Length: 452
Image 1 (tube, rainbow, N blue to C red):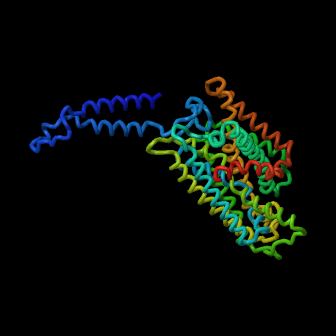
Image 2 (cartoon, one colour; image 1 turned 30 degrees about the vertical axis):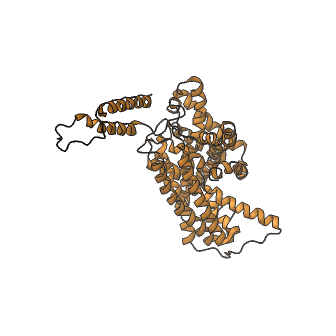
Image 3 (cartoon, helix red, strand yellow; image 1 turned 90 degrees about the vertical axis):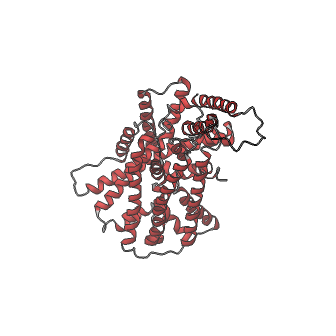
């Protein structure tokens, strides 16, 4: 409404300016050299008025409008649009690093030094390229902002096909990631407790499911923060935790003496089919070390956007900074971990190798801190990955009722989501084993479709 009023005002100013600046005399006649500035009409100052009006339009007029401004103002992703490059960096870094990165040295066992580094570099560059595309596509058409991955998919492939292609992958990635984070975070809490209290035999440790409950309750409490911008501080804590435990893991592995029998010769497979499957599995580990595509548009949606300051500028700055840090974590982790353990790397990744080969000669404090940092990062990542689900559920209510969710309903939805993910983590303990298969279905949409 404000934009229409300003446009109407601009038209009025333009018509007034044209009428005032028009001269009844023939403009083709030469002007008198004796004309003075004093005798010139003050109506020539209409041009600065136009410039001021245009400046006003640029300052207050949004470059793009929302699909439904009223609904977006009520939803947790776009409720607050005060984001900046720092917030973007925190969110991107927190969601972009995960425990999947700890499996990178395991992929090098199959790929070797050369192909391992080449594969990791190519996937990293493709990740940056597709992220840049998504950031540009956030406002690819005048008058629209795609603040959700589903909205961009519908704009790119049509409403029906877009929903089919993007709804399940985005919801699975959000919900499935939160389920996996409960398992990882709960198990890390248990390891931390056992490491710290190993010398005290009088303390009874909780079971794995009980630690899942502790993690879930903590996640539900943090999930009560209203919107994506409000968890920027939590994402900062998660980013610091992720960078710290990744760095600690590879530094300790490189500094400590390598185990006996370290070899870099690739394992011999019994058949060509086994070789192909092993290579594909290794490439899958490299690809799954990078994540967060389904959150980029949502993060950018928290930023203001105008003609003078489009949202893609601070968003790209935040992404470049965060992925510089991610590169400094992943490449040393993969190369240093493979150098330290070679083919002796266990299936659990570098963290399992650290515990297996250096558990006795490494300080319990360091091992405990590493487990605690993994738990903290899992807890903070839960918030940002759960936000698209919260947003989708609240959209159902606001679309129907035409009003924002009351606080008790918003709280109830987030408690229900926490309980649901906890139930799935207990009922389907084998879900992490299927994560690669199901995630592979979502991968073409979230990683490659817009890049191609």
